[in-house]
Image (cartoon, rainbow, N blue to C red; front, side, top):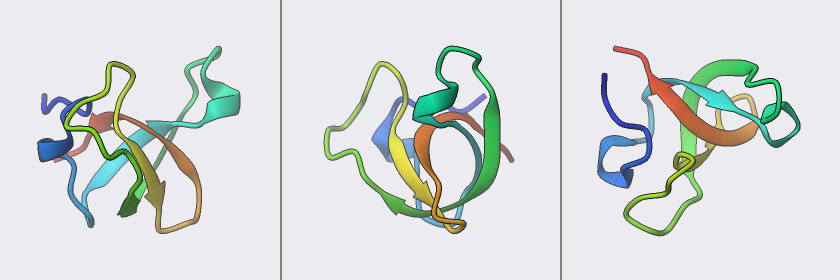
Length: 65
């Protein structure tokens, strides 16, 4: 599985599963296509923060092939 904590693995247009801030305790995942990458650093321990085409914001948990 590709690591969603590394910014180099996360590109616009990828289909991913993210966890939104209000769902961090439950771990509920939302899937969608990346429209914008919000994290500036090369990696982040909880996942790279992205904005999906739907407008939702969250951290990448899984990258779907």
